[in-house]
Image (tube, rainbow, N blue to C red; front, side, top):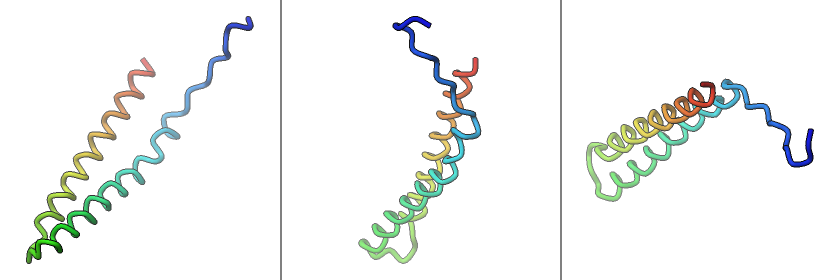
Length: 78
């Protein structure tokens, strides 16, 4: 090996890279629900409109993040 060449790092296993996805999704949805609940309490809504809306937004955002990560892993394998 030449001095100018760095050794190639072995890419992490797909499973290891995606182990935190569940935790990431859970935290994202929890934080969204928390802020939705705070907004509903601030405006004194009887029904939890913002809580529901923020949970849906958090869920969709989590799915988009998951799909981006999967696409990146798939492109690296090709």
